[in-house]
Image (cartoon, rainbow, N blue to C red):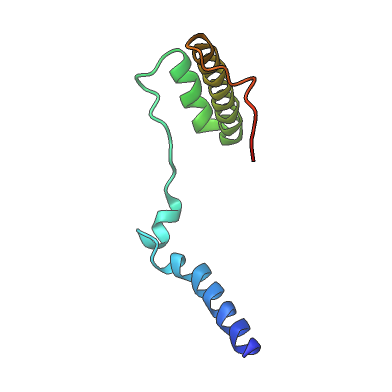
Length: 97
């Protein structure tokens, strides 16, 4: 029974890895597509990020992570201030488990 489960798992892994190749939209020509940002009408910070997306995807990804982290932290800090002013002080909360 154990050997059958291993063979079934190996077969399912093979199907999982090979099926997307055969049903890929566009076939082999789809691999030749290049995704770019149209920067013709952009200016300022939009042009900077558009060019970065076109030229250096690693740096674009790093900037994305940094900006999203800063925005999430900023919104969290801002909401903590708002909640403290409305009377919901979560800093002195006690956990009862």
